Image 1 (tube, rainbow, N blue to C red):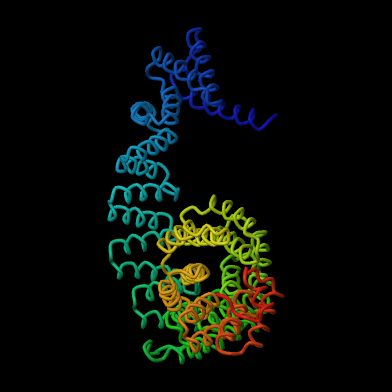
Image 2 (spheres, rainbow, N blue to C red; image 1 turned 45 degrees about the vertical axis):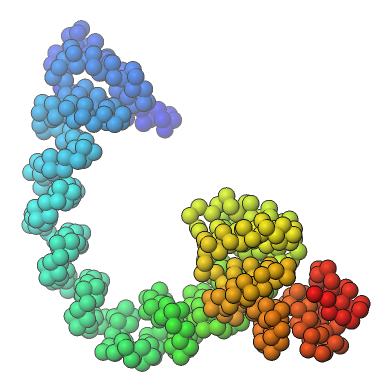
Amino acid sequence: MSKTKTRLVLLISLCWALHAGSAWGQQITQAAAELEKMFVEACRERAIGNYEKAVPLLEGLLKKDNKNHAAMYELARVYDAQNKYAEAEKLMVSATALSPENNWYKKFLADVYQKTNKFLSAATLYEQLVKNDAHNDAYYYRWAYFLVKADAIDRAIKVYDELEKNNGISEESVRRKHSLYLGLGNNKKAAEELQRLIAAYPKRTEYRHLLAGFYEQIGDTAKAQAEYRQILSIAPNDSRAQLALAGNGRNAANDDIAYLRALKPVFENPAANIDQKIGKIIPFIQKVADTRNTELADVVLELTSILEKAHPGEAKPLAAAGDLFYYTGRKKEALAKYLRALDLDKGVFTVWEQAMTIYAENGQYTALLRMSENALDYFPNRAMAHYFNAWALLETGRSSDAADVVEQAMLMIGKDQRAAALLLGVKAGIAHVQKKHPAADVLFDEAVKQYPASGELLAQYSLSLLARNEYTDKALEMAQQADKLSPGNVAVDHAMGWALLKKKDFAGAKSRLSKALKTNEEELPLLLEHYGDLLYQTGDIDGAVNYWAKAQAKGGRSSLLDKKIADRRWYE
């Protein structure tokens, strides 16, 4: 028998069971037999969702037998499925009155009351159910639930008290009462509930952890520490308690480093949970991100190094170390950590994104292209993966392919305004390559408007203006603003150096272009060409020709590059 047929037989059997308690339980007459036939047919039609046939059958049946509570129940279920809650409620009130011992009716009527926000009425029904079956925990929980929905919190707490009186204390009932007291702002009572649970199960350290965590939540550090000490008296190797007590008594304003060093013994324990350890250092990673404090970063890095040894197969310590290196300007070290993390776990997109960001900021577009293609294999629906891929394609001379990727990415952006702005920047770059300069400016303006905190966008816009030998002052201002937002970015240093070169600030230009070349191991052809321009204008013709030749060998596409090399002369 198929699953559908089996389900249908069960539903009809349920209808028959309900029917057996109705007025038809008397001696079968021909009229009664006809009503039974109508009822069974109506049940079958309702079971298969054919409400257009089920409703007239049930309504006709009730006209002939207006006290048939089973038919009322079946018709109410149809009305409920059709969102006709008022009609369903009316029928179920009548059905429940006719068959007050039928628990199915009460539970269904309570569900209907919930849909019409009559929570107290629903609670009353479950109160009745509890009286009939005082050992059914589920009835108490539904009763209390409806009282909470009716904002009768004190009454809900009394329901849980009654539950515990009849059936004993349980973690579930305590947790629910604890939450209700928290909602009332009664921290004392909230704590007492957890203390009651501990008293009932004094050796269960997880309950003591609940209480300690609650004390931490409300800022009562002393009581939290006392609970953690109690935990260690029961379970001396409890790593959560050890972590909580490490560095106890520190002054948060001055002793971050001392506190972190106090964590070392617990971090060295491979049996201690790594997620709990990582949780301890996350606030400090965020602090490093905000302050760029290298001293603090190095102390946290000592802990991530310990974690790498204690948990050699875990990617999390490596990713954490990558963040610490990145936020303190050590991108080479950060990239190495991110790549090792990805070797262990390729399922975390933020690690891919951080690694691709470094390749992009360093102007390593060949590596970025390769990595973005790999990222898309794992995360085909991530707009930022498409963005990095499109940018790398553009910078490696494949603007047509980049345009295709951008169009595809635009379909999956959703509410990601950052990705949308960056993709507009790629579109602007494509328009620049196609010499559609007014269109490029419009796109860059919109991109910067949407994401003004992007130093990369400002730098690319600045480079676009400088390439046309237009708006040099504006280009320099953009580069200076980008420098504040993204220090150490190759595109920013390139834009700053080129703008300063156009302003004949040769010392400033050399400083910035040299910095960009040092960072950019890939040797971007346009950057090489501009450094050659600088050398020519400062009298080093041989050096200039050498750098122009390097740019040409790297695939430089400048219209004047060949002429510069042939004539050994700079052209603007």
